[in-house]
Length: 32
Image (cartoon, rainbow, N blue to C red; front, side, top):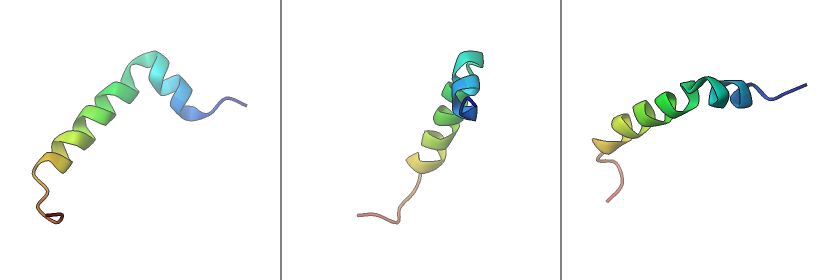
């Protein structure tokens, strides 16, 4: 059984999800 993130990586979807996550965290002001 192959982990699902491997398939996402091969399709290029993992990179897109990482970029979206960083975009959300970029504007976070919870941490000093």
